[in-house]
Image (tube, rainbow, N blue to C red):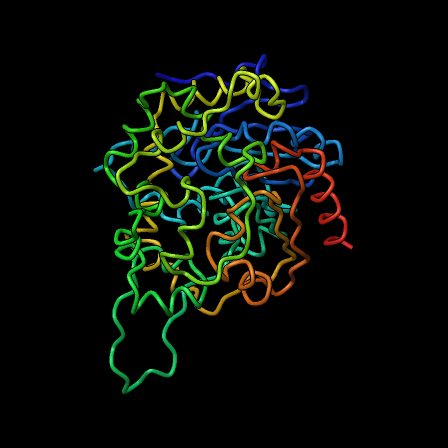
Length: 398
């Protein structure tokens, strides 16, 4: 089935839906605002999101004189050409291939460079790596709601020393402190041994049942997504994040259950406990039911396996095996970090934000935590997000 562009009726004024053929093997769906030929901004979404997640900021950014492009990334939305089978082509979802997707899209649109790559959640990771490997193309980088702590590090000055144990899954995405501890400490085993046994959400997302659990959630896909987005937003009163001391089971178990899940529960079961009331749903201006219906429709067609495969490349070690090639490399273009003040994502990896600020980025322009926003900052507080992006773009080009 050949998909049509996203219906105009669901898009804000000034945003267009289109397809771009032949993007690293994909037929890539993208939203765009502003006139082609202007300086380009590339917006990369996270999980479980879509290009549509940028709908509230695209037209205002285009109003500043930019051509703004937000694709449905590999595994998502109306982009096709990827393998949705759990036992299929996992290797195509590795981070460097996601960067290749972004580069291929930029080239297909007739650009040699973009003014900024701006990524949210897992898109933040892709934006960070794009800036590391192709700073000539991605001239500025904004990471949102997920810090970029740098490349995995190769051992140094270890000739004659005994080989250390292999790191546990997820270590390549943690802080240097987390990586050094991982060799001697299995946090996932320790989580299972807590008085209240727990598991890390990325390990759950890497399991075979996760897609089916969410795609055919007992409460229905629409209500599952409503509860999930609510649980991670500033609307949920329990989101009062703080810095954790260390990458230990006891420390990370202080986070909400959407990150550190109860061992025996699925994600739909986890978020069902926090389903907002009808009154709360009616008051949710940042994600109305018609807007949520767009997400439910797209995920209802595709399921979640495409996005889940991004996590599997991390937890399996596929990504680390490639990314260690860039050991010692940094983001040297102007960069900054934006997140909601109520977003636990800023703190879920102890030391990662500090690593981004102090080591991974050499021209870092600041951390901005937006009041009244949780994890979905560009949807919950679009005006402040646009203001911060505008300020960054102006200062970074001065």
